[in-house]
Length: 163
Image 1 (cartoon, rainbow, N blue to C red):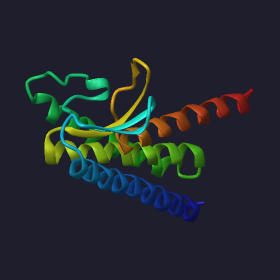
Image 2 (tube, rainbow, N blue to C red):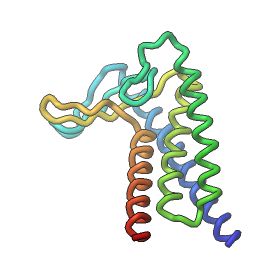
Image 3 (cartoon, rainbow, N blue to C red):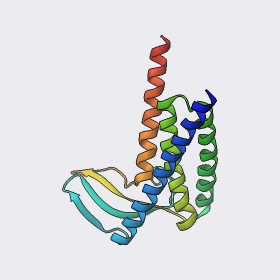
Image 4 (tube, one colour):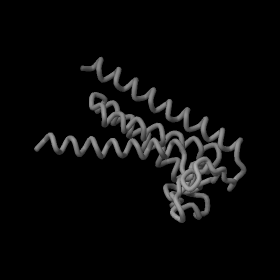
């Protein structure tokens, strides 16, 4: 059991690092390709690349604060990363749960890196249709979304099994 737990943790940490790497490479590409606010249509009426910077959290929460939010979100991100590693250690044998946690961990670390180096998060994916726009996001945000979705599905499965 201990060997399975260690190997599961290792694989999940590798996945989290892969998310961080893909996130940082894609953000570097976006910053080099685009000027702030510029949009390049990839799929008309659905998907554009656009470079925006977010000093806040999800949906630009606290983006207009006086600057203290940078350190606040870095602190939350670091605390979350520590807690997520703890969850991986404790629940490595639960595959879907561990996969979700690893994706969230990679996304959190990717965005913390931006906050440390830039003071803001690089977003560049814009999904929209007609006049409906989803706020711009990045690979880290997408990994967090998929990870949370897996955690919800895992919990639904667990509750159904317990009935």
